[in-house]
Length: 159
Ligand code: ZN
Image (cartoon, rainbow, N blue to C red; front, side, top):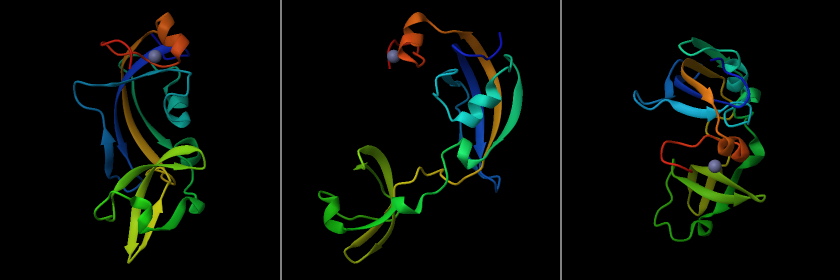
């Protein structure tokens, strides 16, 4: 079976940045599953998946605009430490979920100077060209329920 719209696809992947550092990978016994044609994965990778068969493997190089977008400087902001009520000590590298412009975003603390905290609300992979090594391990028809929801359901029902 071939990857096309409304198929559920299982695949293994290793994700590297341009420097060749491994950023993420699927676990050996747990390929990632998604519903093709429903924007469940980044557009550049979904495009590369189309037409692949089970057992096929390939490398895809995805520019930022087809992945997590360019780095947006306006999403790097400085706020007073008081904005982080309930956090004993705000430290570089901490991540929080925050409402920004009506969207829930993950923000990453970039700097702390006295009472001033600099955070970055860009996706951690914004601005990165992504290198994926992919192996397609499963392609199946989606269920009616999956199609109506627009995403894949696991072995244990809805998620
Ligand atoms: Zn669902």
